[in-house]
Each structure stands twice: as C-alpha cells, then as structure tokens.
Length: 166
Ligand SMILES: C=C(O[C@@H]1C=C(C(=O)O)C=C[C@H]1O)C(=O)O
Image (tube, rainbow, N blue to C red; front, side, top):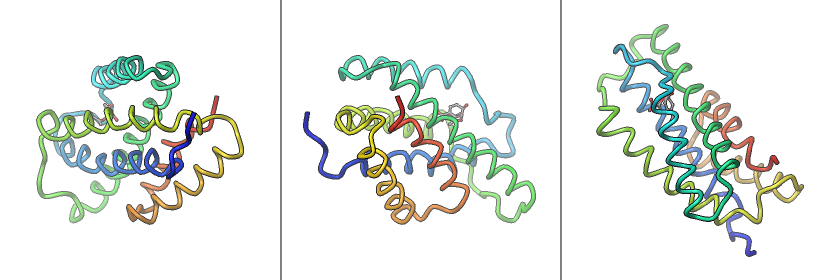
C-alpha cells in the first residue's frame, strides 16, 4: 500500500478544522438551553462514520474509535469556551449560528473528508515509530497553520491520540 506524500498532515489538519468548528458549535449553544453534550447526535455521527468506513473498506470499529476522540475534543473546546464566556461575557460571541442548518452540516462534510483521509493514510497508521514521528510533525504543523491556542492545542492532542494506537 502506498503512503500519502504529506504523511498524516491532511488527517491532522482535518482534525484541527473540526476542533475550530467547535467554536461555532459553542456559539450556537451558548445562552440557549442546548446542552454541550447531545448523545443522540453523537450516535448519528458515529453511525454515519461507521457506514462510510464500510463503504470505503476501512475498519469501522477503529473508525468509530477515532470519531469518539473527535467528539470528545469538540466537547473539551465547548466546555473551555463556555467557561471563558461565562467568566468574561465581553468575549462571548455576538452572533448565534444555527446548529442544525449551519454547523452540523459542516461537521457532516468533515466526516466525509475524514473517511477519505483515514483510507488514504491506512498504511501509515498503527503502533509504529514512523506513525508517531509523522503524527508529531503533522501536529506541530497544524498548531501553527491553524494558530491554535492552548485550549485548541489540548483538544487536538486528544483528537489524534487514536491515530497511532491499536
Ligand atoms: C458538536 C456538537 O456537540 C457535541 C459533540 C458532537 C460532535 O463532536 O459531533 C456531537 C454532539 C454533542 O455531544 C453538536 O452538538 O453538534
């Protein structure tokens, strides 16, 4: 199997993009009754990921595991921002995007892209030094490229933990 030229850069970049989208998710929910954690929606995300994984010929169990980490990271960011915006209301967003019609469709598009990158990087992913080195390189690049602050950096580290596991 061929190894993608960019290593894990594209996969980790998508993870960073999904983590940044958590800001929009938080903005959609802050000041409303919508909870940060929505188990019904999480199950839909995981079911969609599993179905797409089967279609793409990659392991659905590993794929679901990977998406669980993406979801956890989104909640880390949402909790961090709720906390910040509660302590410092002047930093709270002034616009509230619509979760159902605007934000979740963006997350769903990232899911599709993730499946493509998971399939493309399959030969590189696993418990090997090569994977770990590639992951660190990709993580460092993403932190810079996406200008992640400490909250989002912490979330990204959690999100990519499953990449070289198994
Ligand atoms: C992103 C959301 O917040 C949480 C995180 C989810 C995710 O990362 O896909 C899904 C449901 C929620 O538990 C959301 O509600 O859409």
